[in-house]
Length: 160
Image (cartoon, rainbow, N blue to C red; front, top):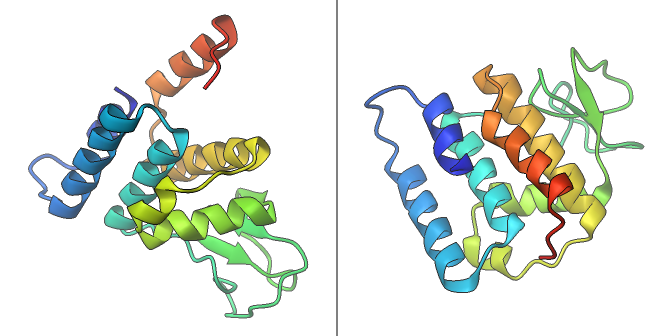
């Protein structure tokens, strides 16, 4: 349901995005075959961003092109990492190194590699928060089902 909501709120009517459709089908098939894996949802979110033209710049400073970072600051408005010497405009987040590595992998689009990932829980939590904020920033909408999922996780503890 969450995947359908973000598609509904992100896409214009009758705008064909065949690659995004195939990504969604592949993710749903994997969930059906192998069971739920949160990294698959994060993969779908990242591919939605790529298909909408909001692929994050993760290999250099989005403002000056520098590849030197003392801290990994991501500017939502600029759409990428910002080095220490460049000011970030608007909202920004400090990313963990393992979260950045996951973002790079997810944005690369290799679903087979993503399936094999075993990430630390803290990296997955930050990745989920980051992708939620980044999507909401660019599509300018809140996702209601996400809040319901959050409430259910707290109300009904489930081990995955």
